[in-house]
Length: 83
Ligand SMILES: [Zn+2]
Image (cartoon, rainbow, N blue to C red; front, side, top):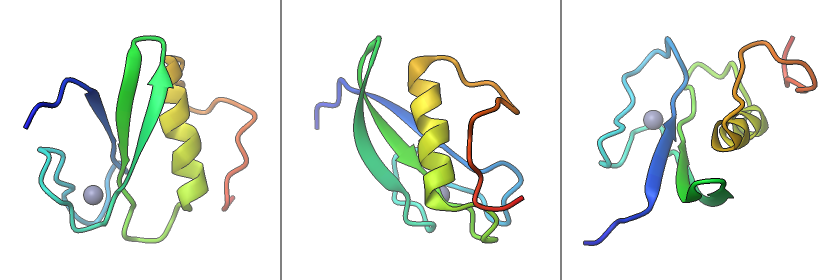
C-alpha cells in the first residue's frame, strides 16, 4: 500500500471513548474526505464525538480551518449547532 498523501485526524477532545488514529477503523465511523491545501492534498479523517455534543457540520468547519493552517480556538464566524 502506497500512501504519500498526508492524513489529518480531527478528534473530539475529552470524548467518552478513545479514538483510533493509527489508521485502523475507528468505532465512531469517521468521515474521510480528500481536501486540497497549501501543502498539497490531505485526507481529513473526521472523528465523531459519541456523546452527541457536536454536529458533523461543526467538525467539517474545523477540519477545513486546520488545512488552511489558521485553526484558532474560539474564532468567530462559526455557527455552532448548539450553544
Ligand atoms: Zn473516532
